[in-house]
Image (cartoon, rainbow, N blue to C red; front, side, top):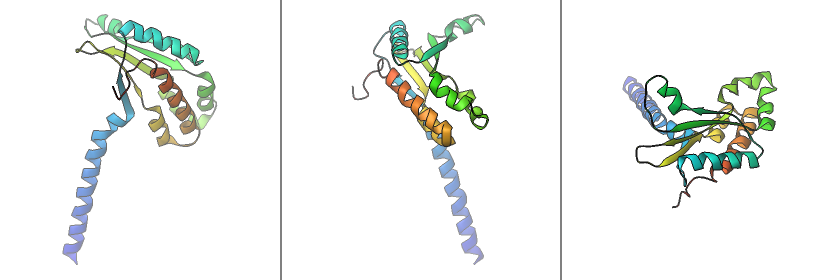
Amino acid sequence: MMERFIFILIGLIVGAAITFFIIRSMAPKMMLVESESKYSFEETLQRLQQAIDQKGWKTPAVHDLQATLAKFDYDVRKVKVMAVCQPDIAQKILSRDDERIASSLMPCRISVYEKSDGKVYVSRLNSIKMGSLFGGVIEEAMDIAGHQSEMIIQTVVKDKKA
């Protein structure tokens, strides 16, 4: 009887450890999405801004991380982060006290950067999956924002089949 209990306990511990390592290795790939752009760095930014404007979204800020780090004597490749917002969606979260916890995820961020291979990439948080962790109003708002921002981003990225 005791041997069986120990065997079951070891099985649970091993199973939990394997599950932990699988989740730990897959989580970054599930929560962050990277796509190669079809365009140059500047053209990617311009086309994204056009798509953002056409969709009725706003761009309250664009953070030039290359310039920011240069102020501290670091030399990094081009990277700009666009803070984008759809006010109608944002107010669904920000108008409710219990949902304001998600404000740290707002506004949506779209990062455009150049890698050492010379190619330009666009990355973003997988808002749809992230929202599903919260449920309720946050999930609904992040689902809408996620689908709309993906439509914006798809205007500049290469087709996954290519």
